[in-house]
Image 1 (cartoon, rainbow, N blue to C red):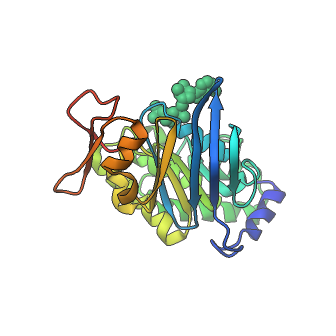
Image 2: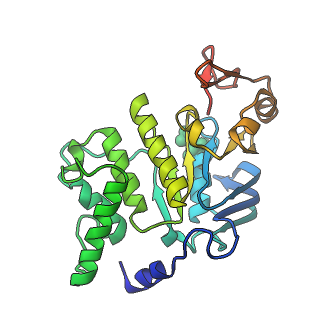
Length: 288
Ligand SMILES: Nc1ncnc2c1ncn2[C@@H]1O[C@H](COP(=O)(O)OP(=O)(O)OP(=O)(O)O)[C@@H](O)[C@H]1O
């Protein structure tokens, strides 16, 4: 970590302590990629300690919303603020876990090395030559965050030998190691079995609500995270709906967004099933 970054981190106030401004605010935002508008009119406010899901069908532009927040895709319209600044200016306070990161079974890097990379930035696998006290502080923070995500038992193993769920926990630890105020997770539940989905969802909910980190998670299926969520932004048909899951995942709202009759059913175990979405080929589909 360079000295400027370290100084920045010392200045990082407790969540909510630097005024009442939102961690993330989109007002009438739109994005264009490859010459076409993916979505427009998106409004979203995320505060410290709030867990928000970005939902919608494949290819609608969920990952692009994350890239907009990171400043790697520009807004075509509207206003976007991240910790009060234009996108890209506060990235050192954002923990980002991109979509579909998997490690080859032959990968020799240990889990602790992968977490440590969150501190070392671009120096993949080559720890920076920190002087003694900073090296000790870095090591302590890596251990702390590994404990926070419950990965102590396997963090010293080569990451290629960890299961998908274990790897996801270590990647969340990597995203958390610099004490971000905003955590952006792009489909972290993808390719996990149901039990691991539940574990990672609960872990994310705990980090968000107990540590005060704002979380924005792209999800294909809302059900594993439903009970932890404060808010959803549902993208479909070039538009969006934002609100609590109960407000947004309804037959009326999704019918309006998709422009065709869509029905939301609630199973006896509380799971949501969306029937009749345009890309749905079978009898039903988990909500998301
Ligand atoms: N740089 C680019 N140039 C052209 N098209 C792009 C670019 N980036 C993304 N797209 C297209 O924009 C659309 C939205 O992509 P995005 O990855 O945001 O969707 P998504 O909702 O996250 O999809 P999925 O659920 O399948 O991951 C896709 O059709 C994609 O091919």
